[in-house]
Length: 175
Image: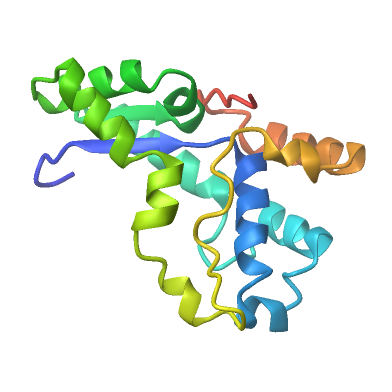
């Protein structure tokens, strides 16, 4: 902020973040020893912010403060990156003041596809899992929370979300 750098903040549906976090942690030996491998335990810890990177709610609220005070801030939704990647790339290119053309867009889309990333990018977590499979790349989809959240999880999440995010302007996309 002090150096006037441009910030691109990607916001993802917190329900999918909780599920992604749990899928990562249930393969991590340290997390397993802390009981986080159990979905219900991980869900509660995520709601309370009792996870290694802290509360999602607090982080997003802090980022909203930065956004309000900084004209060099671009908010991107992860879900939009899936639905309309070309539109998002144009938005980012405009934000950073760089020209973009169809050839460059296609190149970026290929390089950043989940398939390419999971095949060709390093996954240092492989050294920590007993079977060497790693846990950084899993599905790369939107809406996987529906496969894990029960009605009770959803109700509990919504209560906490409504309380924590009451005075913010963030709009979350669940699909």
